Length: 221
Image (cartoon, rainbow, N blue to C red; front, side, top):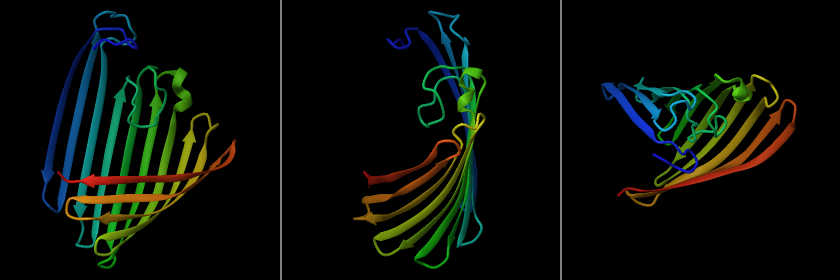
C-alpha cells in the first residue's frame, strides 16, 4: 500500500502455521507467523526485505474440579512499530524483540467464592542503540477474588508491578487496587465494570497516584 506517511509501494507476503492438541481437561495451542515486506519503490530503505516473526503458545490444564492452571507465551521479533501494546517508539527504529508471558491458577474455594493468582512477565529489547532507552523488564503479580451470586459477581483485585529499565532512570514499583462487578441481564447481554487506584513510586522521580477505571458491554448476536 502507498500512503503519505510512508510513500513507498510494498510487496507483502505472510505465512501462518497453527496447531491445537489435547482434550477437554488439557489442551495446548501453537501459532507461528512470518511476514515479509519488500519496498519496491525504494529498495535501499533500511532493511529490505523486512521480515517480522511472531510465535504464540497457550496451554490449559484442569488439575481438579476446583483447580485450573493456564499459561501463555508470546514472542515477536519485528521491525514495524507495534501499536497493540505500549512497548516503545511509534516510528521505525530497527528490529526489536519482545516477549509477553503469563501464568495463572484459578481455584474454586466455595460454590460462590473463587480466586485467580497470576504472574505476568514482559521483556523488550531493541537492536538499535537509538531505542535502547526503552529496553526493560516488567513483572506483575496479581490476586483476584470473585464472589458470584445469581446474576451478579463482585470482584476485587490487587496487583504489584515492578519495572526495570536498562538505564534505570524510569524504574518504578506500582500497586493497583481494583474493585468491580459483572452483571448478566440475560443470556445475551452482560456488563463488566471496575475501578480503583494506582500508587506508583519512581526510583528517581518521586511518587504518583492515578485513578483507574474500565468497562465492557457484551451482546451475543
